[in-house]
Structures are given as C-alpha cells and as structure tokens.
Length: 164
Image (cartoon, rainbow, N blue to C red; front, side, top):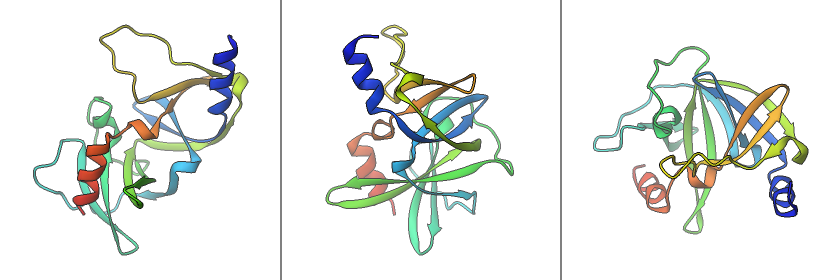
C-alpha cells in the first residue's frame, strides 16, 4: 500500500453501521446517522424519481424517504419485518435536512480500522462507483463503505428538501 493509500484508508477509519442490500454488506459512518426506525406508512409524492418512495412524519418533521436498492439500480424487493429506514442527517444551505434510506436489514455497528480498508477497485469506465468510498474486510466479510455525501447531488438534495 502506498503512502497516499494509507492516508486515505485511515481517513475512512471509524464506526460504521452495516446493513444488507440483497445479500451484500454495506456500511455508513455513524456520524451521518440520526436513528434507525421500522418502516411506517409512507406518503407518496407524485412526479418524483422511482427511488423516492415518499415522505414520513418523524416526530413532527416531514422526512423524504428513498429506497437505496433503487438508488443503486438494484432490483426492487417487497419490504418485510427486517426492512428498516436509516435516517441520515445532511447539511444543506446553512440548514439541516433529514433523509430516510430504506435498507433490507440492519446488521450491526462495526469498528473498522485502517488496516481493514482498501480503496475502491477499478471496474472500468462504464461502471459508476461514485457512491463507494472504500472497501473493508471485516469478520471474513467484504463491506462496501458508502460515501453518503455522494448518494445525492446538490440539486437532488435541494429538490428533496423542497418536497417536504
């Protein structure tokens, strides 16, 4: 590992909430997470992208909800009792916005060390890996570390903020 790769992997070190989409493991740094909830009733919003499932009422706040499977262009799946919404916190235009992401199943919070992290492999020019921050090898599993700041573009965040 080069010096630059070591510096990058140590910057990704930390506590990650791990979850499943399909049978793959993903992780989001806990600094982004407000809370985890079961799926409540979701109010659909017309004329939104397919991955936007609608909005929920979270303690008096209207929170947009997206299906992370659809955002990552994975096949849609019916929700079950293990399906959860992870509420993320974003800073936008001098304010905060909360967005819920639907995941198949929350696993656990893992302490991921720099020695377990590798940079994203190169898949070729036709494959979009913008959401992938790095890869981690933990407990005999490969965990894709998600770069939350790249799940949405700035314009998508503004549209989600205004959809409330």
